[in-house]
Length: 65
Image (cartoon, rainbow, N blue to C red; front, side, top):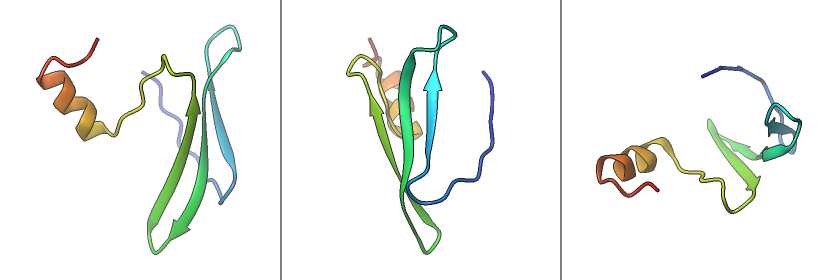
């Protein structure tokens, strides 16, 4: 896996693409309030997006796939 650390302001976006340049997901900062950041994800339905704890729970219970 790769890691990229960024600073973004409200309404700024990050684009996640594959090696061919096709956009897989767009992540934007919707709101920043008292240390909380609200992120908005836009992706095709075949791309799964979960919070880490939800993903790990699904993986533990074999609900992925």
